[in-house]
Length: 443
Image (cartoon, rainbow, N blue to C red):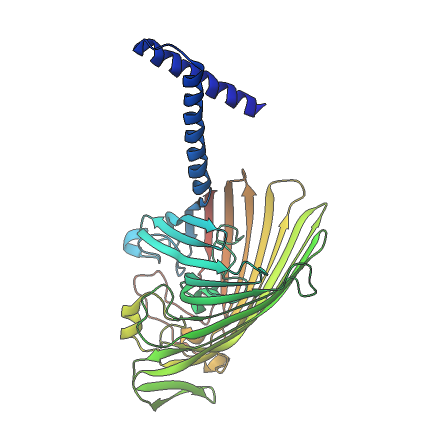
């Protein structure tokens, strides 16, 4: 029916233009002239169809997250010019709030038969930056292999590649934020997948070489290896997945001292400047979901452990801040381990979803309890819970509360009072909770 209407409209338009021009030029209407104009119209339509097909190769998508946060006096928010409490700006209550655009992403994807290219920008009140710049090329014969190169997600675990537009919590787990602060990295990756219909369908291997500095210009000749082997299987209403990951690389130490832990205490030794300290992670992840009359139940979790070259004051890996990377030496070697688990449940036929998350992080497994004298080496338990409301397919509201619980068995000196209300006492649970209310629009 629509095709007939379109054809009648084009024919009417052609006749109108033809008779108008003929009347203006006082030229007689002939069968030959009408056929000529119809042929010209067909050529124009074909040209437009070609252009439309080209435009179909381009896809534009994105999302905006407007975020309101309320933090306790020693918490750190994700938005705001100052992300910690300041008595001179926030009053004397100890609690404070911040508002901002957490993420403003726009993604451009150009697709061809043999692959695709992606550009993704992040636009907020803090400025404009980029998140993804890569292209992917696939072999056309068996459809089991592809090559990805540029800046993209590291192939480690499930938490990194799980998009922030879909995530049921405001941020990734703390351990992932520390180990992979930029989430993405510059490098090249090969992907091998089991052929459809074969006994190994669902098996996928991702392995590549990366610079290791996150979204930053490489400043040395080293490359890190990252690999992940995953198996997914799906039945009628049940989905199951399991994966193992490995990261093997190094971090440059710009100091002539190296600090390691022996017998529960830090020791130091003289080393050559710019020594490359080993950076090694291992991870196991698992996902399970089932759909019942009560809605979709989703459970996923991960365990991570390894060796982290870090600074004296922070456990975090090097990222785009190369000034910090060059000025502060990554001279402290810490063995770590951590784990997390999510429980996500849709509530019957309502647009509501309940999310629970538990995570544990021990940044230094070689120092125990009363031997801990630095807050960087302190272990933490984190409990988070929230509610998601799917207002429309494009609009979602999230309310989530994160509660960190530091280990209270330690010998960390109590800080003197400063601009904060109370001295920071790690021998008690420090008030670091953050409540987040986020409205997300996706297009």
